[in-house]
Image 1 (tube, rainbow, N blue to C red):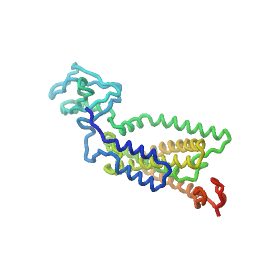
Image 2: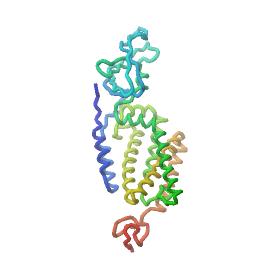
Image 3: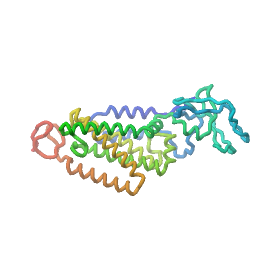
Length: 333
C-alpha cells in the first residue's frame, strides 16, 4: 500500500555536492543550475487537496483511534462501535475518503490502513493533526518546526562558550566580523541566510496555505512553484552551496583548530541572524529597512577591509598589498 515518490535525484544531488573539493565560482554556479534542473518534482500548482487516496503518512501522535465500521449518511455516529488504535511511527496509507454533510463535527471522513488487518475511519481534522507525510522533505520540515529553538540554543551556547574560552585564555581567535578572514563567502552566507529567514517567516505568516500545500506536496525543484516559494527554495540551494564553499575556504585559509573555532563563531552569528530576521518579518516595513542596512554594513566592511587587490605570483593567494606574501614568503613587487 505504498505510493513511491521520486526522490533519488535529490540524494545524488547531495552526494555530488559533498564530493566537490576546491572549485571556482563558475563551477559552483554550474552545479547549482544542474541541481535545480534535475531535482525531482511532483508538485503541481493546480493541486487543491492536501492529500489523495494512496498517499502515505507516518503517525506523529502517540496514538490515533480508528472506527472500524463505515460512517453512514443520515445516521448518528455510533460511539459504541468497535475501535482500534494505530501508534506513533506507524506507517499508514489513505485508502478512501467519504463526505457526510450532516456530520456536525467534521463532514469529511478518511479511511486509513496500516496493513490488511488494521484499517478504519477517522475525522479528517483528527487525521491531519496526527500525521506527517511519508516524505523526507516533509519530515524534515516537521522536525525543524518543533525542535529548531532547542537545537539553536544548544549550538549557540557551544559557540559562545568556545569564544569566551579563547578570549579569557588571551588568544586572538579568528571571529566573524571582529577578526575575520579575507573571504567573501561568510559575508554572502549570512546575507543569504537573512533573505531565507525573511522569506520563510513571510510565507508562514502571510500565505500559510501556500506553505501547507508545499508541506504536503514537497519538491526540491523551484521552477514549478508559486513565486514566493520558488524564491525561498532558490535561496535554500544558494545557502547550501555557500555553506560548503565557506567551510572549504575557511579550512584553506586557517589551520584546522583555528578553522573550527572560526566556524563556531560564524554558526553563532547565523543563529542570531535567523532569529532576528524571523522576528523582523512580522513587520514588513521594518524588516526591509533592517535587511537593507544589514547588507550595507556587511558589504561596506568587507570591501573596506578585505577586498584583495593583488595575487601572489608564487602561491596565487590573495594579497591586500604588495610585498612579502604572508603565506609562502615570496616577495611581490
